[in-house]
Length: 147
Image 1 (cartoon, rainbow, N blue to C red):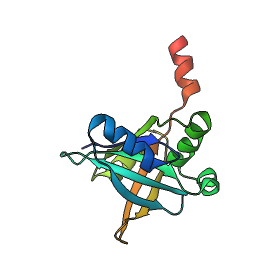
Image 2: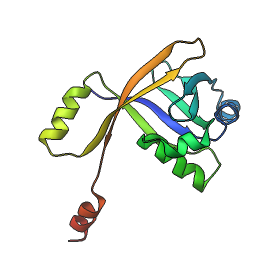
Image 3: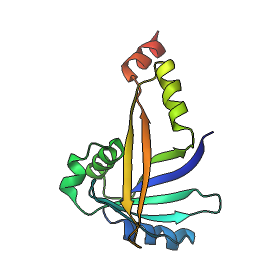
Image 4: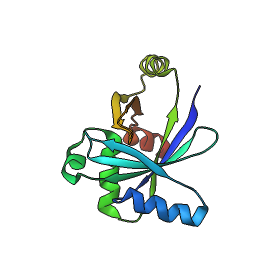
């Protein structure tokens, strides 16, 4: 089963962006932690259904620009285009990632990953997860649409 995990909002300064959003919509965000390998950090606003909004900020621009994580590459591209906080990505959660990988392989659906992720929480503990990115062949799709 898939469920909405979170929506990602870009911002060079995640604390400021989440605070501005929070004042406007009465949402409280807390510091999530640092992604040391990617040069990023986040602020999170949780909802009662376990979904959340993530403001993804940058604390090391050089690490961010060289990260091999597709999400961080997407963040880098968005921040080149605008410094305004922008919703640019979403994540689905599952406890069945290996089954999805098998399904993608059987159906010849291209994907990147799983990509391991982790961040240091403010309390010093480490949170770990895996990400899977389906890939799409836009040229093939566009050709089929024009036929």
